[in-house]
Image 1 (spheres, helix red, strand yellow):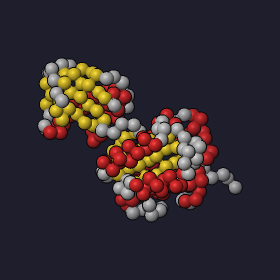
Image 2 (cartoon, one colour):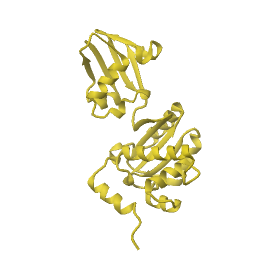
Image 3 (cartoon, rainbow, N blue to C red):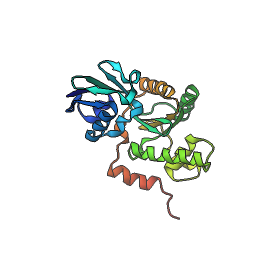
Image 4 (cartoon, rainbow, N blue to C red):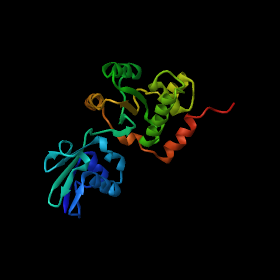
Length: 235
């Protein structure tokens, strides 16, 4: 039997701090496959976001995901980044973080964060226009594909995200509908091919803001509200 200890996002994904795999041996990859099948939130088990140790030795220094684990061994799995919603999209690392309340000037805040984290694409929006984190992941997927095909409607990925989220090609209208606003809940969307730069961004917002991903959860009420605020009124 193989004992698997889970920490951080991995624990949240499975709902337990430890599970057992009743097999005489398995590769790290097979263990991750097993955890995915019993996970309520498999997105938290994306392999690029995990550190996996075998008997306190990092599997990356052994044979990576091909490392063989035997009965009696102890495996520990921990997410690399804690807090927020962490994803991989192609070559990009993505962080989605809900914020309980914005107390700063939104425009100055976003400009300041972008200035400090030049290797990270950063956008911030009103949390009320987000129908769950998967909504944002889908929109960003469209943005990156549009950039790849050279069919973006704007000249910056951050603004492309905002107008794709709102369904308008007017920048001022997109900001009015979905831009970050003071004194209400918000959401940071940050993505980069440099995982270390993204971690530094996350460390800053964790120290300066009251992060709360529950403000992004979908609901029937939020869905009805989005239909009203994201569609042009009929003339």
